[in-house]
Structures are given as C-alpha cells and as structure tokens.
Length: 516
Image (cartoon, rainbow, N blue to C red):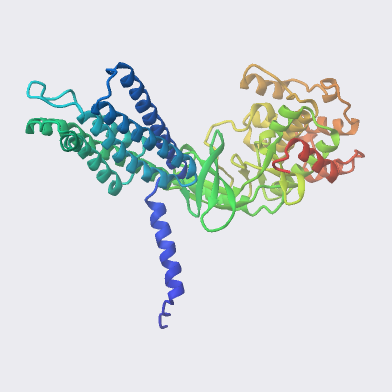
C-alpha cells in the first residue's frame, strides 16, 4: 500500500504536537515553577529594600557637603530600588506565566549584579589595601541558583555575565569617576569568587531543575498529568489530574509499591481493575484507565467527584434528616447491589468513601468510591489487592466477620453491616461503638450489643428505618439482609417524606454555593 503524502496541514499539526511534547519533557512542574517565580519577585523586593536602607544609612553618616561620590551612590541606589520593584511587579503581573518570570529573573540577576559591582567598585583600590573582602556578587549568584533554577542554556550565560559585573564595576568607576587603575592581582582576586560561584551555581541550578523534570515525569500517568494532591489513605494517594488532550479533569489514585511489588500483585491489580471498570451503576465512581507509573507504582484514573463525603457532611452540619438518609441509602445500595452481583465485596464502606456530588443539574447525587480493598469472588480465582495476613477495613465500620479475619464468611453482607454503621452515624452524629484503640473497637463489634440510634440522639428517628438499621447491625451474617437488593426493596417501601429536588438544590445553594 503506498504511503499517503503528508499534507502541510497534517505536518503543521504533527510538528505542533512534537514541540509541545518536547517543551513538556524539558520543563518543571507548573507548581514548582510558580514557587520559583514567586521567590524571584520576593528577591527583587528584598533587593529594593536593602538598597533603600543602604541609601538612608549612607546619607545619615556622610558629610554635609555634597560630593560626587554621594551623587554617584544616590543614582545607583535609585536604579537598584527601581529594578527590584520592577521584577516584583513582573512576578505579580505575569503570575500565570511562571517560566517567563524566571527568565526575567535571570535578566534581573545580571542587572542587579551590575549595580552591586558599580557600588563596590566606587571605593578606590590602593597598593596598601589589595582587596576589601570578596564581591557580594558571588553570594548573589549562588542565591539565584537556589531561588530560580533554570535550564543550563540560560543559567550558565546569566551566571557568567553576572560574575563579569565584579571587574566591570571597577572599570566603570575607573572610566567615569577617574579612580586609579588597580593592579592585575586585584582584578584577578576580585573576579575569582564570582566566577567560581557562576560554575557552582549553574551546577546547583541544574541539579534542582533536573529533580523538577523527574518529578514532572513521575507525575505523568499515561494520558494524565497530576496537578495537586486531594487525599491519601493506607494504600496510596489521590491526586487531581488533567487529561492531556481532553478537556476533562480526573482523580488519579496511586497504589503504594508495597501493594504492587510483585508480578502476582500486579496481575491481581490488573484483573480487579478490569472487573471494577465494568460496573455501570451511576452511583459507582467510574474508572477511565489504569496502569503503571515510571517509578513502578500502580494507578487508577477515575472520574473527579465535586462535592463532599459523608464524614465531612456530618462533622460540618450534624445529624441528617431521615428523608436525606433514605436518599443516601438508596444510592449506596444500588452501587453495592451491582458490585455484589458481579462477585465484588467492597470491604471498606465508610462515610469518607461515600460522596454527595453535584452531577449535571442533579444535587445530592450519591457516589461510592475507593474499591481499593475490594475482594473478588468467582473471577478466574479469588483475588484481593490487599497484603497477605492483614486485617482490612476501618475499625469503626467493620463487620464482626471482617474484624475476625474469617475470609470464608466475608461477602456482601459485610458491606451491609458497614452501611448500617454509616446510617447510624448519619442519624446520630456518633459511631456505633467508641473506644480508645482500634482493637477495642474491633472487640466491641464482635461482642457488644448495639444501642438503638433513637437512644443516642435527640432528633426523632423513623421507627421502621431504625429497625432496618438494627437489622443490618446483627452480629451473625445469617441474621442480616442477605443481599443489597433485598434491603433496597425494604428501604424504598418506607413511608418517609422524600428529600425532593428543590430541597436538595436549596441546601446546596445555601451551604455549598460554589458547587451548586
């Protein structure tokens, strides 16, 4: 088959993608570049302040008569103050373009070094005083390498030109003010420290810049680029991410290496990720992609939920009305019902893993997230992503059989127990059991009877709803609802005033207007 000729339009688009990719490959993460730009602005402000103080001190200590040296220092101080203020203004003006600000910072490094060199060279050198210390330009160069690391092609020329300002400052004073020409030794010694710092500073800048590039590469997950962390848990971190080519945000969960260090664990992860991705309930968080990072961590790319979890809801707004609780329960059960039918047990149902979101025009939409501790049955073989011989779950919401570590008894009924604990928390603002340690909580789930929600809360609780909660909290799995579908039917049949669309929208508009 003949190869199709590349049209000018296609070639232009291809080159554009290549250039964008090359630029992305050799750049620091935007947040680190932003911090560098901010430091450049603060350096300019500090430089201006130092020159201003220097001029006040100098004017206060000099003789009353006006001399050429005083006028010379005054003009140099004014230029130093203005250049520092200019770079500070630029760092604020182009806040959204940090790499441009860093490049301006390199220009400021040269200009400010010239001003330092001219001020230092204003005092004449003599044979008796070969050199008065070392040029402050040397410290200024190494400081800039730390403040605003830049690529080698920019950092080295800027540092060398800045170093040259030390002898150039002497020359300016010789030519303009008639200072005596110092011996060659003075030129050499005065130039040595800034020149040495130029090379050391460039090396330091490249080391920092390279770490930034490596961090940027580590943040790239296939088609996703990590933006900022939004949460963390026992198995890894969750980051807000952006798709490279689609106008869509996502949440990327990184699975720690200890959970994915062997080929077997990676195989299990891949198998379970494929199973979870097949779940179609709108109340289950959608998985877009999964894979391995350059440093060997596994990751999920999921839909980014904008809202708040039930833990945040109760801690901020207290116990919830029964109509809203029923709405939440229905959403969670629809998600769990599908997962259980697919052979999946969540094993970590808790308030922080259930989110209320604004989805399109709908408010209070329930989303179940974090299937990281999922247990799969009947899928080629029984698998789990968790480590061997570990107890999984959260003690305050852990079913007795899960707390006891009896793997054979763990199925969807453990999730229904946890959901009963979550509903108890929504109704009362308190967990089912409280204890000084995780082990104390686990023992209470196994041994201690549950106090009814109505006995721990002043708000009225629907009697039929309370019975369903207590049904879920039975110690013996055989005494609980046997599946999520059975419980869902009971919940939907309850005669409770619904949490209607207008009430949902009104609540969000009042309490979360930025999301409503």
